[in-house]
Image (cartoon, rainbow, N blue to C red; front, side):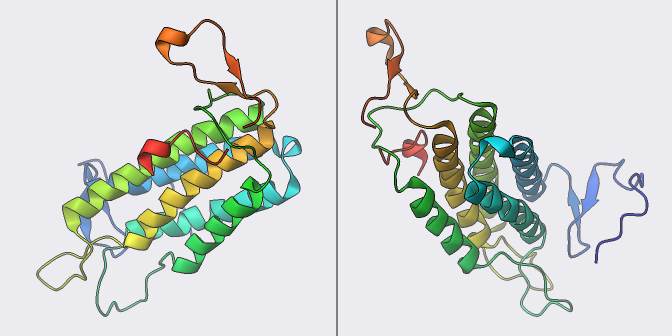
Length: 219
């Protein structure tokens, strides 16, 4: 159980913070940046869910679960890998990644093929999901920086532990899911496609539509 009896503590005024294993880290540490970006992703999904009346029930229910799992991801990223910790840490597991992939297949099954990138926007719910997708991509990039900085090895008494690769993989799949959910929530009839500069006279509206995402180059 988490107890938050006092919100301000003044213990971080010098630029340090405590990780989940109570080890000390600078607030500029890539690990701290990564779980901070995860928190921002979660907040953006929360904004999208304020428009749940504009979403299919199945998508809203999936995002409710994702919000809980993102706390698991943040806890995971803030807990260096250790061989025999006194208290087993909270870790995101492979079955959570599998669940994201299953939702991608389910919610994307009826979406038409894309012939270009989509301009983010649409309904308030869809636009918020597009924003959440881009923040999630940043969280994934931050997590990779943390892994490149700290590695993915189990820590010892002399060497701090690294980052759980499954947590990073979760963020990659989640950004895909958020893109698919944005399309499903908006509907594809009025999707406005990106037109490259030289051909840009009027916005292109999706006609028959795809499986490629706005993040195709980042997958």
